[in-house]
Length: 575
Image (cartoon, rainbow, N blue to C red; front, side, top):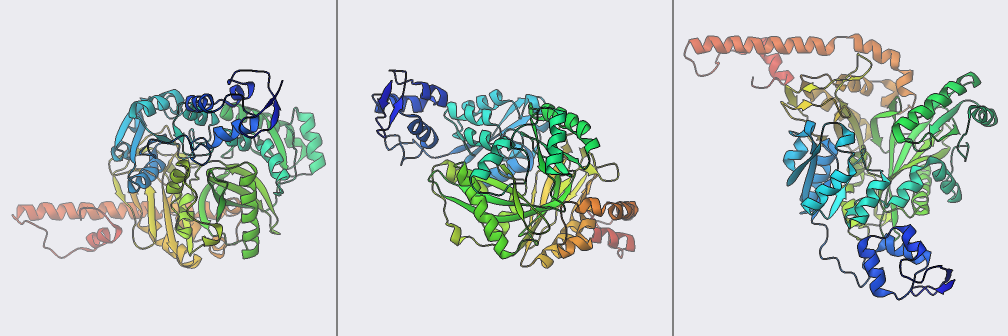
């Protein structure tokens, strides 16, 4: 039957006389929202009004009758490692209490000790702990957390989790689940971007159903092409196809990998952009329709589609292109009514044509370099937006200042196909000084578990120019000392010395192009020689100490030997 919406006066079709209309049931209102509808409206509302109330219910402008008892006072961080600590630090500055969750493997982790409260959530396996939605929601209830921050990875882009939080009346610090679903499906996202006037890479707009269809589309688009998982991310379910003979195997393996990683085997094709740059724009949106971008990040130094080094601003973009891409990034976010912090990723070809790649509906690993050059704490902004506040700045007020570079520090064996290298850290000396930031979670004596990502921290530097930033990064990589485990620090140092990187003349094939040179460099036993020298220096010191004890001396007053001086220079502790 036809009804008149009591909120906007629109005429709409409704087959129910009760307040629990068909639209209300489909939109999944939480308990507070349903109570609000029953208390304030005598009849059913139209679909558009119900969507608006659901989306903006906790903002006073939309719901003047609803008064929040208090703003966010306690946040549960549904994550681990450095990102959990990163979020907690911003919360502490804002006077917000924090709740940590931890698996059995993380009982002695630093984020557990730093938080105001900490609760166990299960065994070491992620599936039984950090991906256990019911357990995390239960802890949120027990701890009386007002909000949950998902960090990145794990449940950060899980629409089911975000919806569970909403149904429980817990704020999810991130976009709403509908936006996640809209942008999580890469095929649907492409269609939305086309409608919003954002350029996309030529490709299919529908899922591929079989190998023959894939072959036909490859011929139509032209080789090389990129086969991608519709629900994919992090390089999973992605295959580069250069000729027709590779289609069948790539199609089969990509679908299988996509199903095992994301529970969905939908794949599609895109034209492969030759010599591309992977450049992303940080965006922020609030509940009042305001969206801004916080400029670009160059993420082209990748190994197997995994980022290794990022920098901001990109040395490849011109000011005009940067402005144009920023405008398109804002248009992309507005097309889905985006709320919170997110990232619009683009591919830029060698002719500086750019194409929408995907949207990440979460905080990115590399967000610190944006914070360094723009001067905005993105985690604090996320929390303010979740509170219903307006953004604290306009687009015209934002500027890029200086240059920032980030290196991902990983516990991996670079000489053994970058295999994860968990173990106990016997020595740790992190660099410091002007323009240096270390986002890490490890400490001396900590055992890195083998169950999670091998990244143990991020090393970020800022300087007034790119040249100075590279020089600073070289210095801090030299100062960074970790013993007891293998890391990729030496590998990162060699990248910093590569001519193409120093000139800023590189793309996503950088590692592939320089693999031979980097592998040759890896055969040079620099670190092994240095480690032997450090051991010898420490042994020399212990021998001197023993001799002095026998002479009843309180300290070692002999002249410093060359071995000991070397040990002092290299940062051996207790010498």
